[in-house]
Picture 1: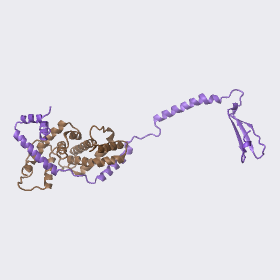
Picture 2 (picture 1 turned 45 degrees about the vertical axis):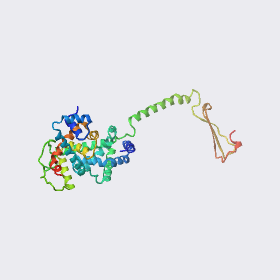
Picture 3 (picture 1 turned 90 degrees about the vertical axis):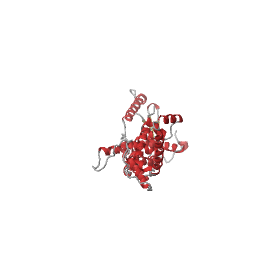
Picture 4 (picture 1 turned 60 degrees about the vertical axis):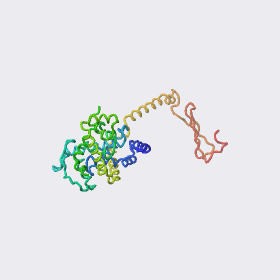
Length: 195
Length: 165
């Protein structure tokens, strides 16, 4: 975001604080894709991600007075989205909707697991299958580990930006990255070694 | 003091200073295995970026309208109800009225206080005479010559040279 964009965003935040919903509408448009992406990566469900995106902007509107500018507005929103997503997962875990819905498993991030699919050397892997494998592997991570690895590897954020987004220290971000990467490598070893 | 995990992560991302990198690589129990691990991760990272690209949010404008509608529904309830005449304003109004009463009693009332024997009326008619029977002329004066009113009734006009004598 350039300095002009930043000044414009600062103006929009200021107007929103004074109750200007037109300004807040513009802030939503600026940040909705990123907020949705974060929610979707944590929740892995489009409908839930849309609900959390809406809730994130509502929470932001109510808490605008508490935004002190120590992090960027985008990071602040991302943190709200991240917390709202994790809250939703915890609510679901404590109140499962049906007995057939599998709760996310807690697996040691560094554990070795059996490949979920047999090796298929020489066979071309199409994009959809690749995506499916990655999504499945990401699904074995805890929401906190999944979040940092996606923000680092897909969104290419710095450690500091991730720390601001997730709301933890840089050391915690790096530690989570270490275990999340090990876990993903173990999950996908058969996949990438045969490419 | 960085933990091994933190250093390893920074090493994998190429985020260590040169001196730190040399020291860290020297401390690795199996450097070759670590280098292989780093290469594996770089390959995996490339694939991941290719396949887990973020999807744009569907129906973005609809989301905006939903959020703004929810704000509109919550706004009246979330704002504190403002009294038409809050306590603070009531106190200030009371003080103002007391001040007006004090000024009135200190400045205005002494001016209209009657001394014994003085006329009890605030004003009185001092003349009621007009040469033209169609006209009515009345003059009022406040006690002590503090003010006078000349009232001319039914006059179509008053010539300038006959104005007031």
